[in-house]
Image (cartoon, rainbow, N blue to C red; front, side, top):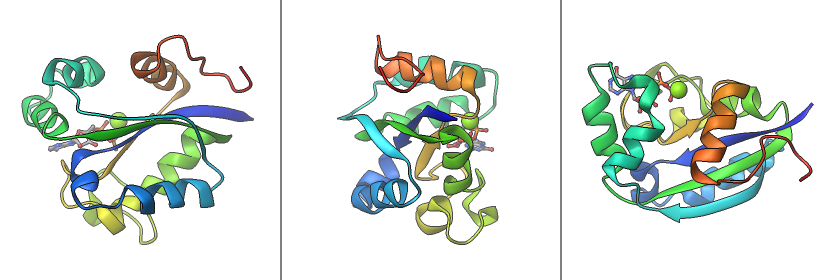
Length: 141
Ligand code: IDP
Ligand code: MG
């Protein structure tokens, strides 16, 4: 099924100058950008985005990191895009990520792990709407 997912190239990857490399990996995996913008997330915007993690010990550090510089926020479209992007990203901890994944290539730590990807249709719907209001989770609109 063709679906959409929300991806973020995080501030660490932007600083490392690997935006182009990451987008190349998306395209090579059949995940095509259908919306994209570069933006600096404020801490409140990062807090709203990661609200599901607000009780976690790392929440403050995570939202400070996410607002430490510009990110690239994208909607990717492709066959089983949500799971396909999770596979392409690799494990949250780059040291545990399979070789060939984006996080194995570019992640520095469990926090500064280069990319975000939605983890379910429910979160993809919320996350796409959060950054691209009015844009549908479903392809073809
Ligand atoms: P995911 O990005 O692989 O879906 P989540 O568990 O949803 O991982 O965590 C969201 C983000 O929070 C991670 O990508 C990472 O940046 C950060 N994070 C997760 N676990 C830790 C931790 O134990 N310490 C610090 N940051 C963490
Ligand atoms: Mg997650």
